[in-house]
Image (tube, rainbow, N blue to C red):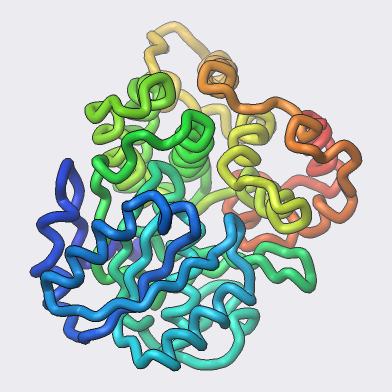
Length: 383
């Protein structure tokens, strides 16, 4: 008999204006001084000020750490820990997309456990629950605010370290679509395709089970219906709200089922070339899934049905081909680049990328384990 463990933050707020209702939930965590982890863009955008207002109304002092890079580094983490300790903060509030969320989780783990962040690469390496984290999300993509996963770049090794740690789970997640309106189309597209990657990989992984399948399939439907609208009109609040539900559901899916080689490969492109994670996932997704479909074509039937195929007279292989084609069409529709050269990478080190991908913590979740030569060939599709 198989036992499944389902991780989810204890409190999750979502819907229009929910940030304004967050005060009492934050108050229940205790503490008096918050380290607000964010990036420079969000600090200038006014979004951080809205969060600071909520904290102030609840009597919290705030210290801002805004140096988080798009691919957060070990230095980002340890600089954040140093500021937290210097200022005597007893609560962490992350404001942003996946980068501030991941940095905040890493800071929380080090604050509670000590050591260097490189010591926590892998699965459930910490012993003590993170300092309380309130995760205020501003992009519909990574779902880091609701997962036990976080990713930090080791700038010395040029490797994205994947941490899967139940102790990093946020205490409160906040997904307010009003914080996501007006975001650039390219950011909306990249984060939305990242969310689609989470759902698809969660559906085809051997770790999938009925509960994760249900949330992942709902995610796929919502993204195909609403991502193009959100990209076309950044102020379409209905589309933004539906994408909030998509990332929440998708986060619960992969948080508990796992991921696969799309993420394993995308992590290397981010670690070596500092490329945007969502874009890398979107570029790789159709090609990795085309290979996965050769091994588990039956896994794609439910996905095909969810995005509109009448599968009553279709084979598993036909369903899989339909899914791969529709993913490619969606990527083109929302403006995802198709080649690494469009991102300024003309001659990638495919041997290094493949070697590192095969060591990535997400790799074991793939439905088949490719050889190095097969990984290189998958990379070659985006050259």
